[in-house]
Image (cartoon, rainbow, N blue to C red; front, side, top):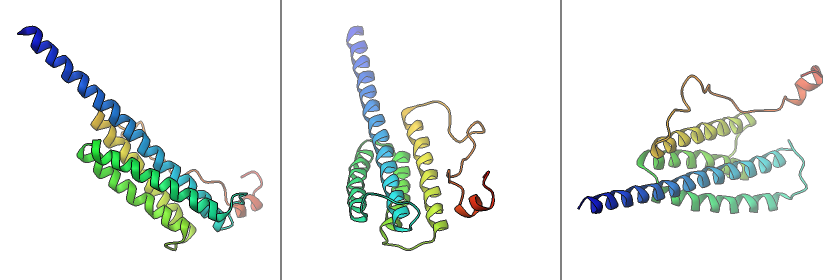
Length: 169
């Protein structure tokens, strides 16, 4: 009887560990897919706005962003299947923020450079919220929101106007 109970408990622990491994893979894959989309959207937006030259055509960049968006959608579905309630809600919020970036990059919605940056700030805040929810769901100790982890802003290059006025900037 004792052996049976111990074996059943061992199997339960193994099953939980297996699901945690799958959750970790899904969470990592989703964040990676979101970040890939943002990276491609930044390339497209900067190209369209004349902020960066590219050897890749706008059509190719748009196609790459669309393919990455499909990959992000598949990764989001894994979150819906495996994630806890808070993780699923954080993924919904992150997905909404990421779509705003896609839409601005592709011209579906209009916005200024400051609005573009604000959308990116929101997306990275939502990535951090997703990380926090995933850590809790996986039982990872600690928090990304405490005083040892201050909020950080986007890393932006200096504007060309400030470079002209102060070459040391």
